[in-house]
Length: 508
Image 1 (tube, rainbow, N blue to C red):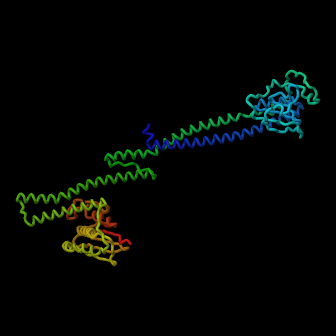
Image 2: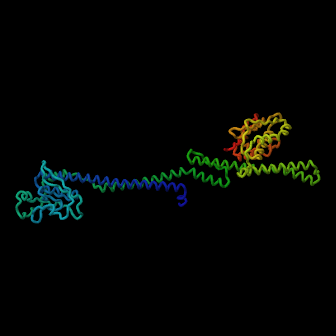
Image 3: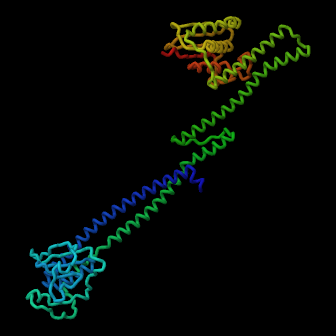
């Protein structure tokens, strides 16, 4: 479990889960707040509509019966149905109906609002009009105390309220008659006006919040499942890359991964495959380099060893010819070792150049002149041409001479008798352009990309008649790059080859 949590998929899944949880929590909090506000607004509208129905009931009941006792019954119904404290006050300020208390005191007299309520009441006052004439005020308290309960309908009875209102006489009312039921007209009005019962808003709010909670949990689980499946599918190439990289680390350089899509993961797969191919090629080149070095070193060493053993056994005399042969083989071996040293230093970026600002043309011409005798002996025409005023660049004379020597020697090796080798010097944009062209056999398109590789020769037999050790062009490329320049080759089979060196001019 811990390994899954610390994995990339686990972290992505947990991250998505946290974001999803925060989103759902934010939506839930806002929905609950909005629901509460809307519920309160709707509750206010319901209470207003209820008060309107209560007012209508009082008006219709009084208009139909002209009897406050009947109105008392209607008021008690409203109080029992809505849980309100409802009081009806006439124009004189007397309480003529009350949902929670009988309207008369112990002496049978009506009370005022101030006499009945010791504390300031929280009533809302609404006038009750019958045929445009004010008959009373309807006072409604929608927040009665929990210990206050409306009168039970058993408390309703017909009294001499009407007689008392007409003559206003008598200090003591007669004993109340037995309980009676309201008139049929009043009952019908109550049933008609109050037949609609509003559902409790608390139930609506609780139901909505419960549904929201269930929907939130369900959507959260579904979202978590989708995220898990998505991350698992999206990270499948990553797991493949991890497994391939692990096997690559053990030495299996043949590992490749599918390159699907053009997204970041697809680009990563392409990069991995390129890296694996480069590593595999580098290993093959390393093996080939080891074999080539061993071969190149073994040949002169074998010759030297053979001559020395022959001299020791008395088979060959140590005359001038033999010593000259040993000396030439030793020089060849030393040159080979020096070439390897230069390539190694250049590859490490530690090749030191002793640069100076001078015209390079004289150095190039002198280096080419050293091959004049050899060209005549091979029957090859060797020429040098120069265009422009001659550039002045920053270069190392020894290394530039080595570049020219290797290129001309390579051209002479591959140019048959009667052919031509041309060296051209020009100064484009105050730099140096050096071209060495021959009329030899040319280079095939297969060999051309690898012409600057170490120990690479187009002749697979490694015959010294057709080539040297295979380090000359490699050294040319390293020395040119050390000067900040570039070297390119253009060739077609049967049409000869042209090497072009570009060195930057003096920077001002």
